[in-house]
Length: 276
Image (tube, rainbow, N blue to C red; front, side):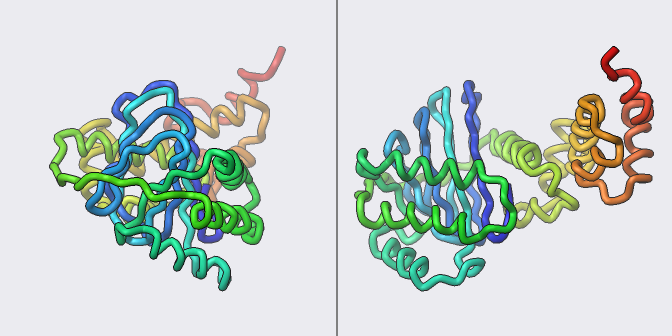
């Protein structure tokens, strides 16, 4: 979910299947909490083991990447831009963490086991909430997490990270972009997210999609939007409501794309799937 300077991710998977986020950076701070499984995380030039009671904190514009080692796994992540919520208290907490994180890019901190459930609960509330206007609520939870990191956590040691070019980096990037599209489908109106979230060029990601899936990124997005619209119509929603929920601003464009893709009209789908 992406709202008011905050972007959240919640992943709960039974199979690791080399799941990862390749090394990247973004113009926001990030908090990541793993609640199941174990993973490795690279923050700047340091690699850490991240497991139970561990929280990763990454500063804005710093490189980082994630690789899941054990399944089932679950993690919560929140990216936030401090300037989206002007608060002296928030600024003070972030300044305190700068001194605590010897690695200028961020750190992995082990949270006291008595307060770790509080941290996890705040992360769940941030990731599961669906309000797109109440910034105060989101940043209240973020400040609560930062307080615990500053007062009830100790820094973990890592090892120097060897920057290796991975043969499967293209597959990792493909999986990451596909996951992002799935989580944010109705909010994607163009391909600007490729640069803002993954910091790769559209041409590079398009090449990976065409080489692997035989279609461009935008064709994949439209296909997923149409699939979702079909399911909504089959579930009883009107075609116009389904189009709107899937991010189509122009119904005529949606209608033509739907018929071309499924070889059937939205009204025919509604008739065929209507309970008898």
